[in-house]
Picture 1 (tube, one colour):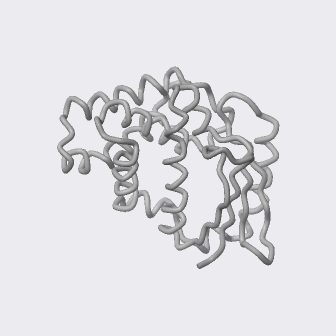
Picture 2: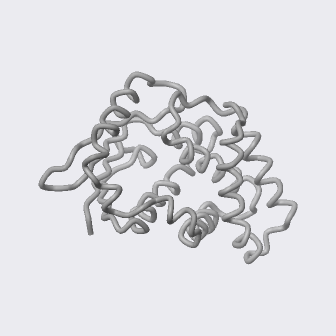
Length: 200
C-alpha cells in the first residue's frame, strides 16, 4: 500500500492521540518511536484497498498491530489506551457527528452505491458489505461479509488482535448517541458482522 500523505496523517492522528496515555503508563520514548515506525512499515507492505471509504479504520488496525509489537503491554491494555484516546479526542468526536446525521435517510443512496461497489472489488484488503435500510427493528443495518481489519491482522500473523478493535464500534456508537446491537463478528468466527443501529 502506498504510504501517502493521507496515510501518514491518519497514522499521525492515532499516534498523537495515544501519546498522553503512553506517557502516563510509563512507556519508554524509544518504544513510542518504534510504534510510529512500525505503523509505516506495515502500511507500506499492506495489501491495497480498492476504495478508501474505510481507510481510517484500516490504518487504525495497522496502528493497533504496531502498538502490540512495541508497547510491551497486553492487547487489552493497548485497546484501553486506544479507547481512551478516542473518547478524549475532541477532533475525533466532532468528526463523528450526531446520531441524527449518521442515521439520516438521505445518506441511504450513497451507502447503497458503496455496498454495491464493495461486492465488485472482492479480494485484497477491502470490506464487502450489504446495507439494510430502515425497518421496524432498526434505523440502519450493515452486514459485513469481509473485513479489512481482519485481513490485515491475518496477513501480519496476529488475527487474534482483530476482536479487540470490534469493541471500538460500540464506543463510536456511544459517542454519537446511537444504539448498536450486534450478535456476531468475523473476528470471533461469525459468518458475517451484523451491525444494527437505532436512535437511543
